Image (tube, rainbow, N blue to C red):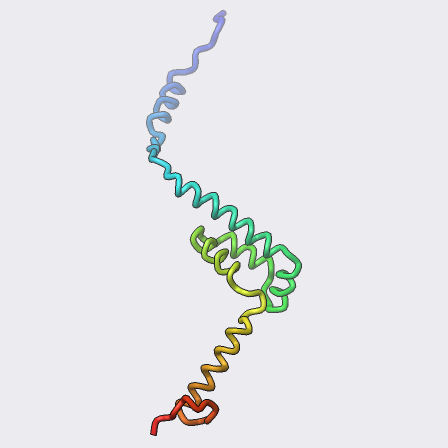
Length: 132
């Protein structure tokens, strides 16, 4: 009676063949730039901040009034690239919540009146002379 059992030679051959046929995946090593690591960390923080803003009740109500499903908006934020998230985050902090500011509206109305005076449709401002 044998004390141990040796695996069949065919099984050993198949195992050796399997090891040689497995694709060897090359490892890519490179230097990690500190700026790139910081940029990735900032992008993740900005993405979390955008998701938090979208989760607030006020923003959810505004999106619903506009016909946008809040879940779709959250999914869209998740699909944004890091540079798009940074751009949106920067613009979101600069834009007023209600749209155009009062100064912008006054300037637009002023420019419309100046243009209509310049083409001769109105005569509101004395300093604007229409072409003759």
